[in-house]
Image (cartoon, rainbow, N blue to C red; front, side, top):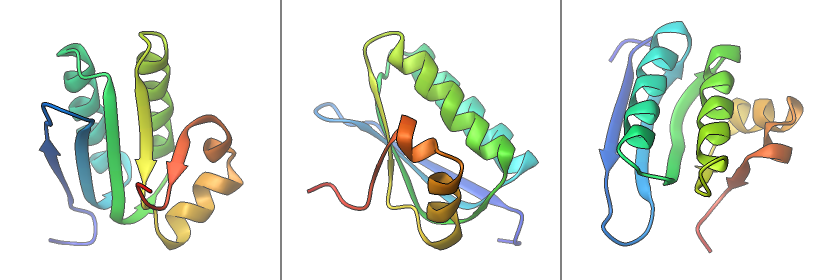
Length: 110
């Protein structure tokens, strides 16, 4: 993977949340992939989504917008979106921009 590549892996669980693991950078290219993935899941009726950010190395305003848009769609249908295990600068960005005040952000599942 090059520094700007983004890999998205989806695990749909019959019990519990659908897990979306993202690896790489959520910039203009990665954000488009993540938005399509989340929009497709929401369109299929997956309304309990856990986004694993452990391997996300960077995020810009477009990446933040993807999560806010998905949260808004899910919230309006009674679902839940959780951002899980953000690291370093991604965690600090979510906190500084107030995203963590709107969307649930967890360091673990405990």
